[in-house]
Image 1 (cartoon, rainbow, N blue to C red):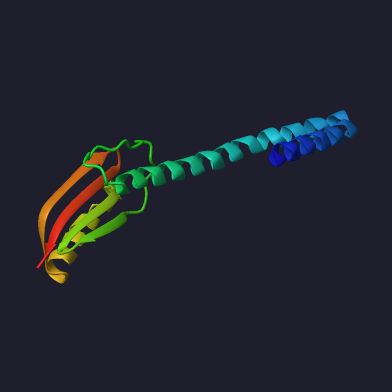
Image 2 (image 1 turned 90 degrees about the vertical axis):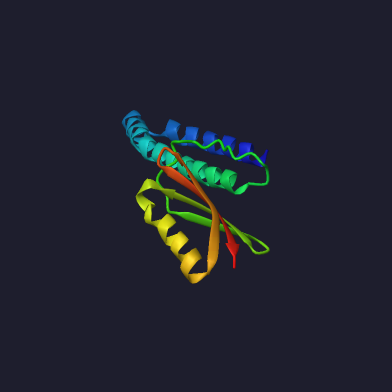
Length: 142
């Protein structure tokens, strides 16, 4: 409620300022406002893309259900690889989300698991949605 009152007060004071300006100044102000709109729209679109990417990753992380199908927006921009490791006793569940540009990540993860951690990979799978690659690894620590 306070926000709407604040916006209304700002609008009224803005109207008073506009009324006191000469017509050419009002036109200049309107032109400047219109020029700024594409920048503001682009900022909002970038924020939306980031929120959608975060939402897609959160859906991937909510593996509590037995269903392995996720609704992922294919317009998610290219992103940095994300890795999550869940440990259940001697079993590791590894979830890796990469773009097609980061193919090496899967190979590096499997190398680290087998050579350095001494674990045995019992299952490996992946799914590709647009440019996003969702990898799933199940490992048994020896």
